[in-house]
Length: 293
Image 1: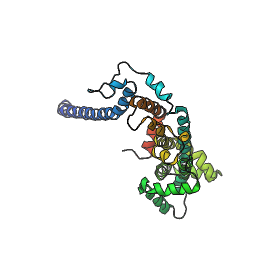
Image 2: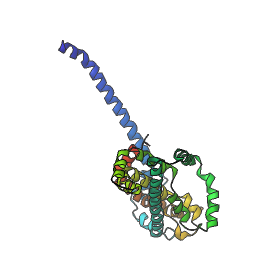
Image 3: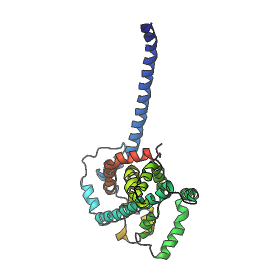
């Protein structure tokens, strides 16, 4: 009886295994295709940065430069119009302070929305979320006029100071993570005499490293690549960031694509390295805060 039933089940199990292998093959094929599609611009940038000028726009496309022009990198970094070290310092100031500001302010506000009980909490949380629906161009001119009245235009203040006041998306993201931490931990700490600030700094924040890393990485990536903000508020070339400095290679009649791509590769490198070292915490943070998919 047992052998007979096993013989009947064997075709069914085999068809399930075939179906599973087929599904996995299709999934891997789609993922590999998507990965190639996303990597193509990066590959073109690196390839172009090493090409002689006559090979940049040839057809069919040449992916492997012959010979590779490594001197393009030194020409780009030593170009008088592209002050790499100065722009790098400005980018680090802008991205670094903005990241610190976002992480501190958003974590405090998110903690208040997630763990404290106060009058009107849900109403103000909805108001905070509703600000995400306001398009950035709508607030651009009023903000510029306000910062101009304050005398901040031409400095880093319009780019950095607002980040110390929080951002709705990151407040929402951190609040969702804080809600997953058991309230019993906070109650036990209160019984032991811990203050609310102590619970926040000694219990909640150490348990929230994945979410905080995600917020920090998102903020750093955005500010590092931000072009519009520095272009509007920074009027002095000595304060330009790397993203704005790259525009130096764009002329009215001619663009130095080889040098521009070499500089772009150097500008992209810190972001790639940062993501490489923080990817584990970053993916864990995205998964635990429920913003995947």
